Image (tube, rainbow, N blue to C red; front, side):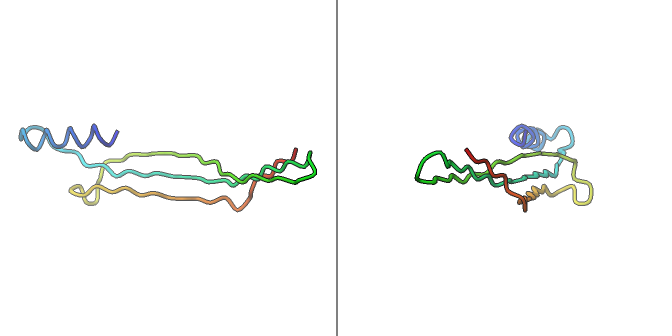
Length: 85
């Protein structure tokens, strides 16, 4: 997505045709910790991992149309998921 927009803007500037459009990109990343505990053996084993969800939005730059912006927002969940075997 970003690569095609950048290429189209370069071609418009080089060819002096069209009006290059600048975009602001917003990336929302939500992270949830997981704990997997195996209690079926005498040695208790636990594995820790994370899962995440990613959402990407793109909007035309309105306030400063000559600048592109990429905003990454990380959300770390205060609640963890625990799975016991």
